[in-house]
Image (tube, rainbow over all chains, first blue to last red; front, top):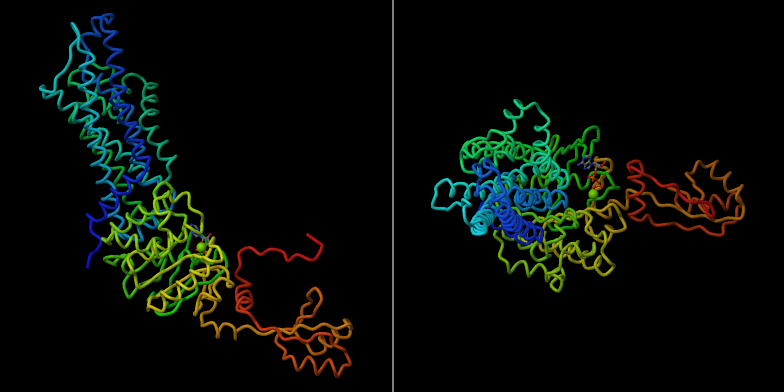
Length: 264
Length: 305
Ligand SMILES: Nc1ncnc2c1ncn2[C@@H]1O[C@H](COP(=O)(O)OP(=O)(O)O)[C@@H](O)[C@H]1O
Ligand SMILES: [Mg+2]
């Protein structure tokens, strides 16, 4: 007799994600911000380049500039991740879902798998498109550009896609804990925008010790060429990736524990 | 078959379900009745493992809900008709459920047809009226063709034609040998829908029984009209009958009609009306749950608000 399996639940969750307008809208915004914003900033930078100081030219990072849109798109993928679970709590449909699939861990694993897969694919496509378009726009006499033949460059572009995936999972984990859309998105935005602002109020030594641990700084580490000079010290790309994965595992772990033990 | 044993659920200080035990048998429609806030929905959520009990157990065909391998094929439930994502089409809501339990997609069209939503299957469920949502909820419950069905207040929001359809439909499901549990806070809704009743108040069992047993448990009343108010009241006081006054009549509980007629005649009191009123199921229900309602409204007197 056919029964509930992880594959059948993944198919169900994938259909749920596909059949919501908010998903398509958020992915469209992700693409527009990553590719469109990246192109715009690349163009503006190219226009500014001749007027840049010697220092600015020396630290010029064409990879980071073309990928800068991901730092805006992160909010769109965070919303996708958050809505994936909060929409069920807010509407009450989580009860229908769990009355069909009693194992909460199975639902959680299926939702996370569908989210990871979808955002990683979209994130990688957007990151590559933004990178390539950015280099084409910036190329000109005397302006350094990057190529994917360089291992550091390829890694930065791949990690940009991974960064978006990890942030959608962060939104998902916060949603599991908070259960409300507005609260989850506020928490997400606070972590990415408000925490960095707070660190800039701290004494410089403290700021340099703390700021590199913030998810937004980890994102910059993942997407720049190693050794590029920044106003705060940053981790190496792989260390930053590891730390960000750690955060995501921690938040989803707490969310999973609460999901398993709380009434719905 | 649903078996609930010593089920208890506490929310903070509030004992929502208090040591409830009952069995819901196959082949009949069982009405689950109680005033608002008496714990019906909580009990159903406990049966489905959505809330965890403070103590006690609930099983379906001898198994806890969480142990079922293909839950939709064993239990279908409509808990809250409006609890669905408003942006998804009716059909896609059902397809998502069907996929999770490996139910064929042709069954989705079948249940849409059964509840009469085929024409609106591709519309956003958020645009549905409460009545249409109830039908969609019933369709989800039927999806796996389960032997056990639970419906929480399914009649809310249905038009008279819908109510009639739902009644016949529940009866048909029971006639096919399924276990059918239907909750309501209105006896008037359930009197024609269910064969067996479980009545709870403030989370506790009040009584359980068939329609006939319930009707018997209430006492009949006799309506009396007479021009001699004072004399009749004196007679009632002498005989120690239970009496209340309604707008234009005296209502006496638990005394045979013949006794009242004979005594009035003996006392020389002319009667303009002497009529026995059958107890309705609704009267019994009201009497049984009178102490258990959370909020009671003031009875309005004529001309006064
Ligand atoms: N999640 C909850 N948290 C706290 N109290 C609850 C919760 N759900 C229900 N209750 C309380 O439990 C009691 C029973 O509610 P409910 O099961 O909804 O009753 P019914 O369905 O019979 O109207 C009510 O007093 C209600 O306020
Ligand atoms: Mg209820």
